[in-house]
Amino acid sequence: MSIDAAIPMPAHAWLNGRIVPFDQCVVHARSQGAFWGANVFEGLRGYWDAERQDTAVFRLQDHLGRLSRSAKCLRLGIAWSDADLAQACMDVVVANDLRQDVHMCVVAYFDMAPNCDPMVLTANTGVHITATAAPRTPGYKDGVSACISSWRRIGDDSMPPRIKTGANYHNSRLAHHEAVRNGYGTTLLLNPQGHVAEGPGSCVVMVRDGRLVTPPATSGALEGITLETVGVLAETAVGAQLEYREIDRTELYVADEIFLCGTMCEVQPVVSVDRLAVGPGVPGPITRRLQEAFDRSVRGGARAEWCTWAQAAEYRTGQPAVGVVV
Ligand code: PMP
Image (cartoon, rainbow, N blue to C red):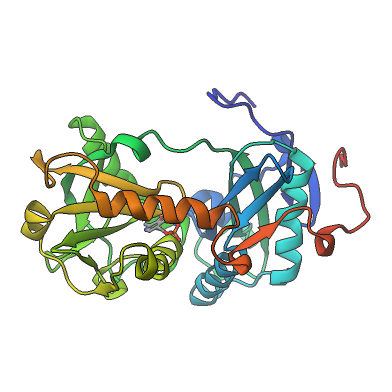
């Protein structure tokens, strides 16, 4: 397998109960997960703490909770408990020993059905977990430009955004690729009613007159864990409550600040929409304060229960994860 990568590939992954060499973390081409994106997944970040020599995985239990809600909606049975998957995540982090911030993907997938039928609901399912090096995204500091996509966000009556399934990301990819082709950093999608939904892989928040506003999940946004975190932090960091209500496209044009919230992009300023500057066209003071508060919280600062340390005593199973080759 040849992977043209800018970052070094990790040595190990977790596949259906075992630590395996990264290259052997494969599913069959005709599995329903690979063929139709029939899977559910979570993306998590792990933050490396050089002083502690350990990685804090952010809001692990919340991500596993959302994974099982997605699986329920798709009637996908996961053969491992949340406790098993938490242990597996820690084993992957420890086995790879990347000593930097990582992005983890926990994926539960429908495997092959009889006759390679991609439609039938099969009880043959699996899970894979990977962790790759993930430096902070470039737009974090200077912000990104955004356009309003010509693609509409999927809806609960067709492809529910609440279900975090690979298949939904066809919509995100169409929108993202169009935006990049047209010279933007990212894009924001409207829902079929013409209200703002979210970005291809993040929720969106606008600041108007000191108020923080975000579309509710019923507008077609994922129930974001970063967004919820920002809502908690906002009360002390900027003295504001996060309001959930519909947002019009032109409200984005007149907003004082806009930022994205997502595991990968963290809290990322948006500095223009459709080539109109957001405020003065640079990241705003409220966004900056929230970035600082967020940064403190992911590195173990805010709430202890948000950070799961990979080498915590409860995750030391006594079985060396490193170098286990099947
Ligand atoms: N919306 C979409 C479509 C996403 O893929 C993500 C990333 N998981 C988000 C929002 C943000 O969710 P979270 O903060 O839980 O990563």
